[in-house]
Amino acid sequence: MSTDADSNPIIQQRREEVEGHIDHGHSVAGWTGAALGLLGSAVAGVAVILALVWLFWVGIVVMLLGLPVGWALGRAGKGQKQHPQQHGKPTPVR
Image 1 (tube, one colour):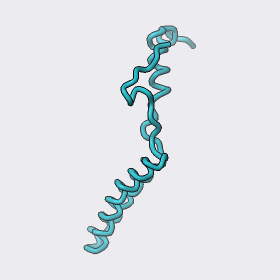
Image 2 (spheres, rainbow, N blue to C red):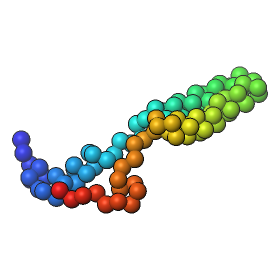
Image 3 (cartoon, rainbow, N blue to C red):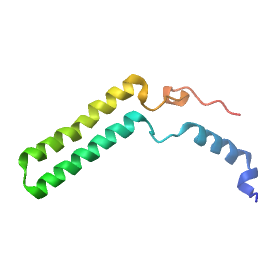
Image 4 (spheres, one colour):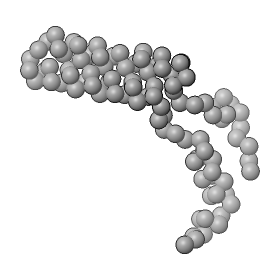
């Protein structure tokens, strides 16, 4: 079933631009950094419940490791791909 929005060329153009350029950071670097942050915060949370100070600090260290590991993976080519408009170049109009 077709709607007025499907036949509108402006909406079609915008939809193509959005679908072609947004990946919401789905990358190995992003997921690894987020996973380490989540794992570290979970370990630190359990440590608070169990009153284990040393385990709390292990969790904090794991959580903070997510930042440099994610950055390093991004620099190694496992991060989000760059798009032309991220470098100040306009997207061509179709």
